[in-house]
Amino acid sequence: MAPRPYSVSRSIQIDAAADHVLSSLVDFREWRHWSPWEGMDPDLRRTYSGPGSGAGAQYSWTGNRKAGAGTMTITEVDAARVEIVLAFTKPMKSQSLTVFALVPTGEATVVTWTMSGANSGLAKIFSSLVPMDRLVGGDFEKGLVALKSHVEKSGAR
Image (tube, rainbow, N blue to C red; front, side):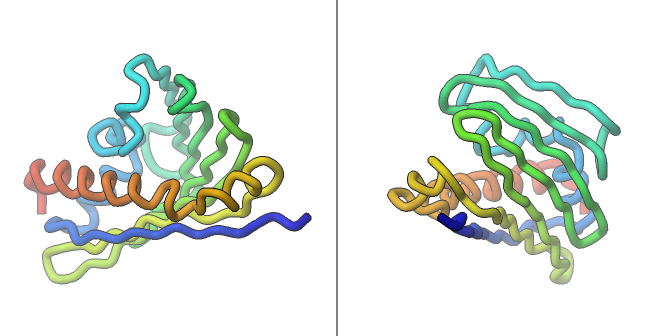
């Protein structure tokens, strides 16, 4: 049985320069301010490795059943794009490509958050019942609103 491909995207306009938005994406420690999953487990264990930010930076977590466990690794960064490999080990093993695309529009920046991959095994069966867009789309929207608030409150343009 072939894996089932998926892609989930959401966008938002942030009233800040792209380089300021970028700084909140390429440093995993900044994600604590805006990630939609931060509140899932108050006892979440985090590990950061590699460089402090940018390509090669890595973030691993282990948490309760809701948070699961996994690793994110930034694989590519430029002024318009951040590429991250997301590998879950719990609750189900899976790997996805996560991309943040930044498009300057005057003094603002449109940020598009996309996650794509292919579900197989149990994840394929689960995704036939609950499509990935429904599973994570709302989280992306919540995260982008929090990212917008975080970046705009810091005031850099």
